Length: 118
Length: 113
Image (cartoon, rainbow over the protein chains, first blue to last red):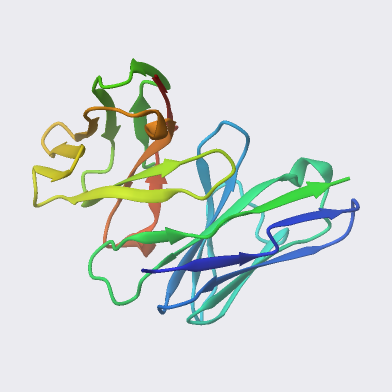
């Protein structure tokens, strides 16, 4: 079945540093990937839609200069949290839509990255 | 904007009983409705989905119903088991607008043995 990997699975960093998270579709091509943020005991909050070869589409209230998204290939999207602060600590999950599926298509989720900013 | 409401937020049932989770969506253009199960610390896993041209879909103990007119859909789990305990999310998506998916707030299901 469709597999999405995410790296790293967890990261601890100092305030002010930047952190890059990778999301890969391992056995299918993903023209569209999504980045979510999830706080404890809460739902998935869509941050942005990552489109291969074009700029990401950010949801209202998400700072595009803080959360840099790059979707350079059909199997890789990266999220960079720039100048991270403690309030950025969260669980970040990506998902990928199988380009071969029609209509809305099924999304497959990565295992998530737990970011802790000290 | 688009919105998906999910109820209840918490559901506790006895093993063997049925569990029902209900969702409503606001965007009438939505045409794809997946349900995800998320266990603690793990990724959401797709358990069943339904498209707008179908009113009901069943997969063993899990079924989903869709009422397009009322813009609501429901998840039904029969003969619940302790391993069904998890958080369940409904979602709504459409084939345009970037295919983005809007998730409900989630339902925490407890199945008591």
